[in-house]
Image 1 (cartoon, rainbow, N blue to C red):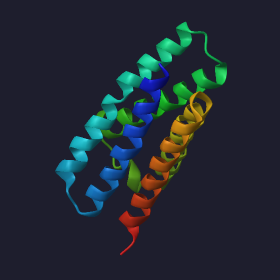
Image 2: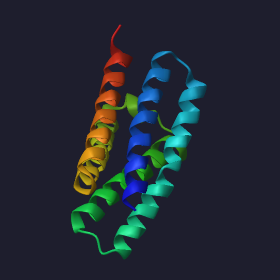
Image 3: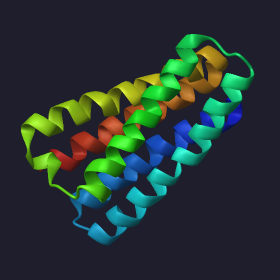
Image 4: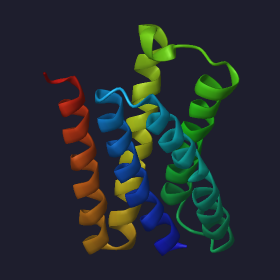
Length: 139
């Protein structure tokens, strides 16, 4: 389960980074495709949760995965079910951002708990994500 979780975390950060760059350049078709691919990561994260529950993993790992899955369900709800421009509504966007970063911090924390070296890989991809986010809004 560890490798599924860790690889999914790295893929998540890389894809969100690409999504930010595509948004900057106005390639909304690529944004749409990347967004859907990101949502498919719900599958390996769910498999990891089921595996960790079966292995009787520590509660902090289970809770971290619940936070990650909550983010995915929130994303599906807001972007694909309700289809509202929540990123333009501050009262919705701020809680969404908090959940997003809670999920990403959960990915980093669990990965460090499982494998210190790969924890740094996930952390580096997170910093790349932040760099892409800054680049999106600069200039």
